[in-house]
Image (cartoon, rainbow, N blue to C red; front, side):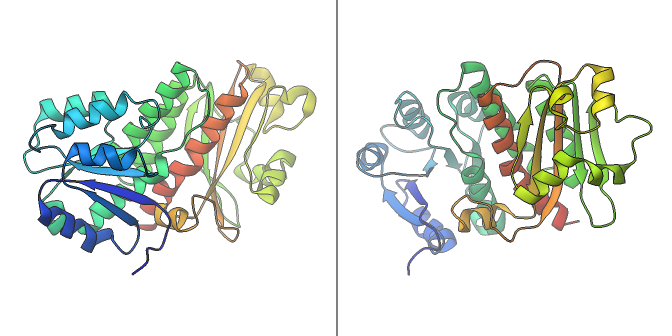
Length: 313
C-alpha cells in the first residue's frame, strides 16, 4: 500500500523482527527503506534522499554510535535527523549520541507498549528538522539547542509548562528583551506567558485587535519583522516599546495544526488552518534576516507540538 506522504525513513537494524515491527507501525504513512547493517545504510544514503534515519544502537561491526558519527562528519548527510533504537540504554551512550547530534532515543519496548508515542516522536523529529542556508555557528547551535530541549520537555510536561519553557528558552538564546505568547480567541486574546519587559499597565488584552500590524499579520497569515517600529509605526504597543528602548520586533502566528497535519501537507500550513496563538518578540538589538528566518520557522514548527498538548487538556 502506498504511503500517505513522500517522506522517506531509513531503518537500520540487524534484527529482522525490528524491521517488521517498524513496517507495521509506520509503513502506511512513510516510504521505508531497510538496511541490515550500517555500511548497507551508507550505500543507500549515497543513492537515495532520506528524511530521517531510525537506527539500532547495537549492531555487529560498525555500531549505531559509530554509524552516527560517520554520518555527522559527512557534509551532505549531517543534517539528516537520526533516532536511535535500543533495548539497553545507558546514560553514557545516550549522552555520547546527543553530543554527536542524535535527536532522541527510542526504547524498543515502546513499539509494543506505546506505539502512539513512537509515532509522535518520529513526527516531532520530522517537523522540527529544517534548514536555513548559511547560518552562523551561533544561530545553528541555537536552533539545535532549542529543538533538542523541546523534544525532551514534550515527553514530561503539559501545555502550559512546555509553553513557558519554550518561551524562556527562545528569549535566552536569542537575547530577547520582551517575549509574549498570546492565546487568541474571538472575544479577546489571553496572555499566557511574558518574558522580560512587561506589557504596559494601561494596555488591555483586547487592544491587541486594534493594532494595525497584528491585523495585517492575521489577514496575511504570515510572520513579520521590523527593526524600527518607531518610524514605521508597524509594531505592537509602540509607546511602551519606545519607553523600554525596543525598536526591533518579530511577530509570528501560531496555527491550530499538529505535527501529523503538517507532515500530511508536506510541511506547509494548510490554508484553512485557524490561527490559535501569536508570539511577539522584541529587543533593542536589530534582527538579521537569518535570525528572523530561524525564529519564525522555530515558532511555527514547534507550535504544532504546543497545539497538540493544548488539545489534550
